[in-house]
Length: 252
Image 1 (spheres, rainbow, N blue to C red):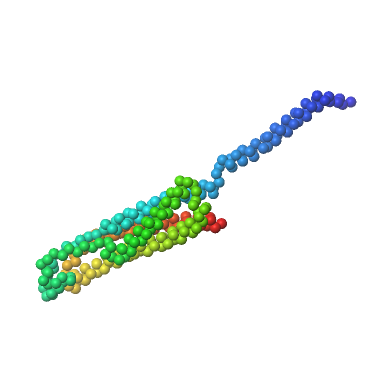
Image 2 (cartoon, rainbow, N blue to C red):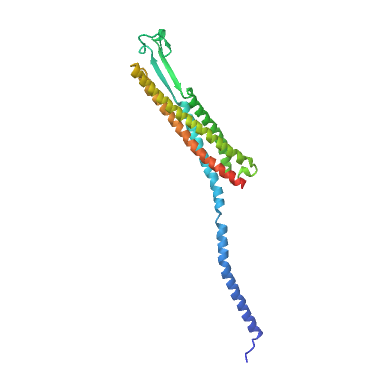
């Protein structure tokens, strides 16, 4: 006959069984708890993206502002002076020359050419000034967003639309300014070349040759602010893409 278990033995077996089940449950639950802890410790990808986008937007705004300031400074400072000694330019059979009356041939004329004397350059300068003012406004918003980690658009959703539309308008405006400066510079230099060639070929006159160097230097310097304006256009394009992301995220 099988011996019956005493109460103390039965209790010991039951306690051992419960301990074994607890150990198995702990072994099964431990990997799940470790995985859950890892998930909590690792930030989601969307959080990393939301933290990095404001920093990228701030850096892009700063680059845009620096390029616009340099472009404006170089535009405003570009000028040249051409000294015309009318005694050396006296024609043999004319009473006027280059708009100078015959009685004034013994005088010296100094012609100053400034950047804003050319309408295309003046327009490019205006686009740069407008872009700089807009970038300064957006720069303050970007700094607040990075420092505080908050978006003003949470309480003011219309700012998302304002940023989206503003970036597109400024992008288009700066693009036209870049095209105006590059196009005007290229056309003026080509026309001066043709005019000098015509003087030398048909009139056998080298009147424009002494002035050519200064004009070439003036127009060549115009390319430098145009290049900075072009860089500002590219960075404005990046800002426009980022604002489009912000608007898309807000509408979802």
